[in-house]
Length: 370
Image 1 (spheres, rainbow, N blue to C red):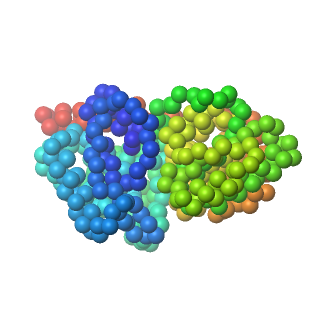
Image 2 (tube, rainbow, N blue to C red; image 1 turned 120 degrees about the horizontal axis):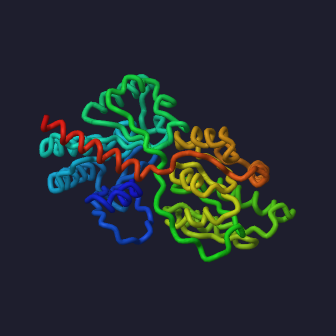
């Protein structure tokens, strides 16, 4: 959503709602308004405030009030809602109140569900498949369209949503959303590998196992002089950082904090070992470097995304909560032996999203005058 908002802000007034986990961003001068809401995160099946002791119901009410007030002030022509109603039912009240307020002020406002490439039910939608899909369809009633931010040759809604044929609004595939690239890092390309867990907060065992795999391969000369740059999660605990520091204290390792410039480090690397979240996968498709994906089984989208990349022959995939160092080492060798990564998947999602939104707004405006 940040990449879409930043890209569209070059031609339009764009406001971005910011109310989840804080994530470091690259500084930049772009005309983008942030609508700041009390931050909420999911923790063991419940939503809780970030750095706040205020009970979640009070935070939810305050979020709904601030969001409705912002919509009344901005009077938007279009609203993109992240993932809902395919997920995020916990914040349904603020979304429905926002939509109702926007419609009251501008009956032609376009309400758009903004999806990623693969959006199967998560562990947070506690309902049998038939109840879940009926719930999604019912909640789609106030929406005008769905924007699926992937390439339809890679994944389609019907691949993971059995009642796709009952969706009553148009579905537009935008291609993958790739953010603006960062400048190259200050070391020679091809001299290092990268290890990252993206935004995953429960990946310490995976990182430690991958570090040991890399250490073993280097010890027997299988990786030449490659070093390994390890990137921690944006909210890694002090204990996690201490464990990673100990694991990388000796040998060809460099421990880094989560970096908004990770895409540039990835592009210059000789090898990537990572989870398989949407942003990481898109950055991989941009960089086209040999990669090992170890999808987080706690995230319902990661395993199927990784399997599709593996089936296309683009990456080596290992599944399981924490593969042992030997399995990761074998996957690294397989990835390094693969031919260069080539694909024709659409990565123009930001520009396509802008074109689609502009067309929908224009069509809504012209239909009002017929």
